[in-house]
Amino acid sequence: MALFDKLLIPTDFSESADKACVFAGKIASKSNAKSDLLHVIPEFIYNDNQIRSKDADGNKFQDKLYPHLFNEAELGLKKKLYAYFPASFRGVSHIMVGRKPSRIIADHAWKGNYSLIVISVRGKDQSEFYRGSTTEEVIRLSKVPVLRIYDDPLILENGRIVVPVDGSLLSMASIHAAAFIASIFNASISLLYVKQTFGFLKPHNLAMNELADEHKARRTLINQLKDFLNPEDTGNLTYHQADTGSANSSSEQLTLDLDGNLIPVSVDFRAGLSAHHEITTYANRYAGLVVMSTHGRSGVRQLVMGSNAEKVALNAETSVLTIRPDSKLFTRQHKTTEQ
Image (cartoon, rainbow, N blue to C red; front, side, top):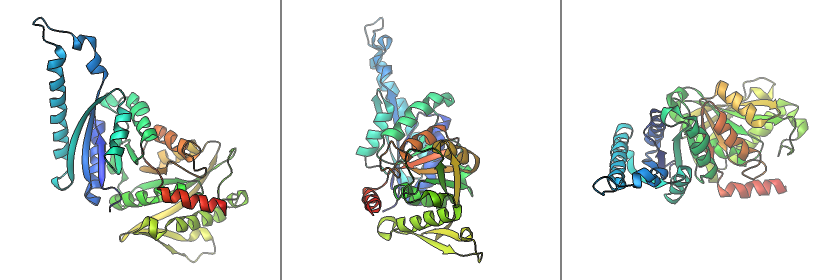
């Protein structure tokens, strides 16, 4: 089964939302995924007193408005499906009404067995409200991966995908998705480790004396990547490692192999008071996309990687994909912690 075999793309018919359709179309064409569109009509429109009132003939305005809103949305969704998705992976359209669009989107994605939500960071009129509200809440609420599109997705062509890691297997959960998207856009991957200079949690599997030596830390992260790439969990994703001949361990070149697509991988380090700030700054400068696990060394969503993922998704001026680790990885992480 493909990594992303069923996509959900929420839209408010804005130009920004169309960028999500472009990215989803690229993913669908690679994985033959069915792509469904979803439009949520805010409930307050239906509860407006003026709309619920009657005209001079005694007819309720809502009786005229309701069919109009649905018909207009249905026509708009149909145009989007035909414009961005060829017939082979064109799905269906959904129209829903609710007070909280983010909850509707997250619940519909889970109940509908979608493998990915692709959503724009902005809505109509480039609204930051959409960015700070609906999209952020979808990331927080969703049980399936969320890809939030910031800008033109085609800038990722021959670009770089940044994967933040914290020294845990759980933080490696985003590697397969990063490799899959890298293979579509011919992009490279950078593993980014941020050392928080004042943190209340010590790094898992990365001793402080190792962090003082980036060469040793790099070796530790690469070994953990190898450990993560268990064939039972990652299937057709493997790695190749070649020595350039230098005595320096950092000279080793790492390449991921996804179905014959070779993806260069580098390892980088940053230090700072705030992990999410360092990740965001690095991503804004170098990345066309950030692919990030929602859980990390603590194993708890709202600690370390979880809170950082939300903050990066809200503040990064680039697209961000958040991945929830598979349940098997939590078991492996627990066993590793006990050792």
